[in-house]
Amino acid sequence: MIGIAFTIMCLIFGTTFLAIKVGVEAGLPPFLSAGVRFFAAGAILFIAMKLMGKVRWSLLWRKEMVFIGAGTTFGTFSALYWAEQYVSSGIGAILSATGPMMIVILQSVLLRQKTSRITVIGCMISFLGVVLVVLPGLAVQISGLWLAGCLVILLGELCYSGGALYSKRVMDVFRETNPIALNAAQMLHGGWMLLLLSAITEPWSSEGWQYLPAMGSLLYLILFGSMIAHTLFYWLMERTNPLFPTTWLYISPPIAVGLGALVYGEHVSWWMLAGVLLIVTGLMLMNNGIIRLVNRRKVRSAA
Image (cartoon, rainbow, N blue to C red; front, top):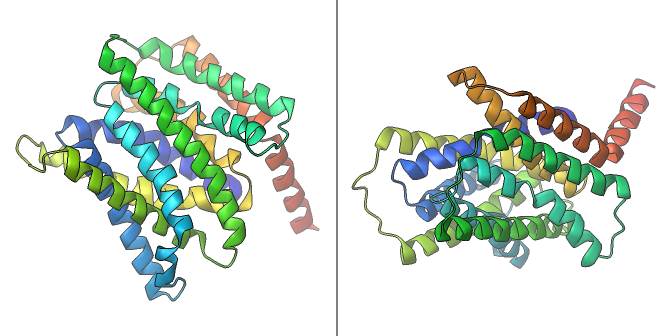
């Protein structure tokens, strides 16, 4: 189940960079788009869990949910949505792939957790693979806003990494709470923060919107990108560690390249194939412990 959930999560997350770009280019204000996405997804999931009797309203008032929402949802996606106005989705994918490396650094520096050498090597190999996959298709026009967008994405990934580490600690405290409910609560908080930021900084006018791509992007991101993929992310984190589910950031660029080749007939170079091989190699090194754990569980189940 861990392998299946991870695969589905990666396939969905691998398309979200493009979906965000489509919505922004269709005229949706970035913060408004992100706020509606997460608030709607969180509300639907939380109400569904409440109707099934699996969560209490009091979970929404816990400060832990506010902190997780501020980090993993508000900080991360306010940065990404804003930056994709000035940065290509390829650059966004490369910079976002620094997330797992940031988790390794934060674990070592702040939490004093020892990180194995093979995990660090795996991170570096996979990141190099992401660069090789995305690099042939990049056309970079450096400007002040482009540089600002890059820095903002990195800041967002720092929020994402810190939020992921904190989420794992919170899950250990809220052992009796369903991960779906935890995900819903943090998305609700992140969503209202994004909507508040939008109300302060953006005009709420639909003039100039391209409705079909804008609404299509929003619906896809609500249903698949948030309700399904983010729930799987929390489910995986509860059963593994903060690093394992975030390694989807290495897999998303190859998925985007594969979709381009399949749907649009885009050229796939040997550099890209070599990058995919490096990504897979790095992931296997980083997640070697999880792979061994899954194999041991299979052996126990067979016995």
